[in-house]
Image (cartoon, rainbow, N blue to C red; front, side, top):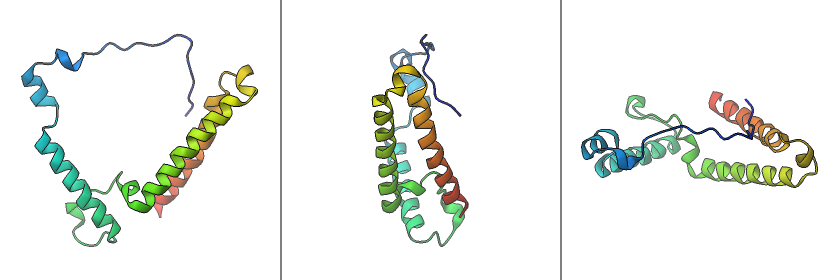
Length: 124
């Protein structure tokens, strides 16, 4: 996978949320009650993950929530900060002036490393 920047912007037409009727809003958006239930279930799942994932596995869906545990949240934050530093450093490089893909390549190199770590963690 590569990241690149185009000289010509691409515009995708879409409806504004103001263009939806009240009925359509109720059909397509979560209610406050539904959002609260999602947050409550997420917290229960994270507590379950932190407790060693014992018990009824059918009650929980941990996929994608592993990074929300306190330890993994810190690691996730560090990775995000390092990705930002990588991009900023690449932007300052003289190579970024001569190669328009330089910053994208630097980020791709960093994110490939992160992706490999994520795959290893998921398969343990």
